[in-house]
Image 1 (spheres, rainbow, N blue to C red):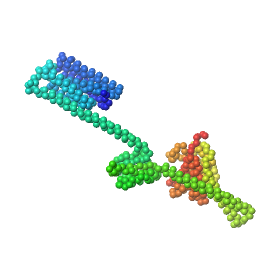
Image 2: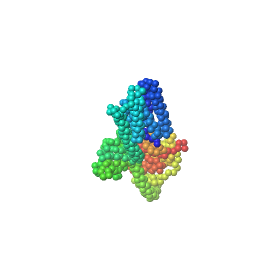
Image 3: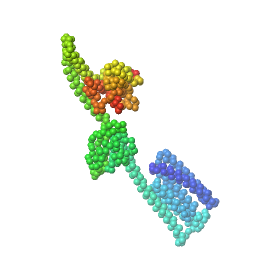
Image 4: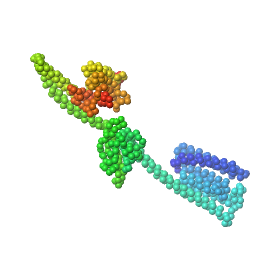
Length: 564
């Protein structure tokens, strides 16, 4: 039979045992050997040498077995028990045999045996100890040890005499004590083994359950907070801490009012209401504030934890960051809206274009043939100019509905922007001391249609020039690394900034809407066309006003291969 448990403790006890045996042998050799005179070699030397050699060999056997298989053979432990009983028996022998005051030292191997061999081992040790004590008792009381010294009986004991009966009963009591100790310690060890085995099985089951539960809850994307009936948080998974940007001490054991406070306070009612007996919130949305001050929408739901009797034990709060979902939903609605507007605009444009051309052409013919003067000439010029302006708007509408990707290829961004800046500097909007600059030094490529990209950046630059004062400034630059917002690392982020007065906060969400304009005489399609072109290039554009009034358009475009 092999023993798998307590290998480390067995080795530790083995080391102590060997140390004790050697120390005991040295003590007996130095202090007791002289008591035996010419018999010292047989009575002291040989037994001690045997005991030491036996312990050395058994230790080597034990260590080899343990190193080779990681287990111990049961017979190895029984051999150790035998050697322990033999060592303790020698102690009793050298201290007076039946008259020794150290007879109860035989309890040591009995208790040690119970620790590793349980009830069987302790009874084996007790039996062996009683046999050894009985041998010593019989030899001593029979007068066979008289010539070894006065510490032994000098004549055979007559147990028929009353004064000698006490000697007999002392050894009987010691024998009974050894068996009693063996039974008690063996019983305790056996029960302990059963308890440890059951506890180990329960621990393994719990560990499997804990690992499975921790793995599931720790790796889901949704945030999860569990609160007990007293309002204390008993679990908050990593996703919850990441979504909420929780940086405080461990939330477990703290009141949810303390953890979900400040910017996280909007979550409190969804926990407090079920705890106070109200209905749980199955599905809802709530806005919280991030550490950077932005608003974050959360999809949220709560579940009540109930006992088998139906009593409320706590509340589970589950939530997700739905920022991307909201943006996608808004983008889909925007595209649906723009598709409808585009179809409607295209239909109207086609219906107006031909009659408008007739009106404009007729006005031109009348002006040339009649050569009117005064008020008539001014009115005909007005018809021609307004017809041209309306035609320009119609062309913008048609361009808006006809935007498609055509010649997509890698373009050197700086070269493209230099052409755009050259056009902008010669535009009527670039009057006074207005400045247009490029702050891009590196060679960066984008994948785009050259004509459409020129239209995008020219519209943005002209929009900035029209917004700034006479000494205003428009700058085209790359996004600083610390400010990059592109989730996809393959996107190139270009900023177009102007020093104008900015856009009112309540109008920011509408600037890319078709027909929205704050400029007198504008048709409101410039930025809508820009966004449409960027979208068709699988990029996107955002507008970011800052506290100082500066406006920044952030354009995200697919990067091209350098040197293509």
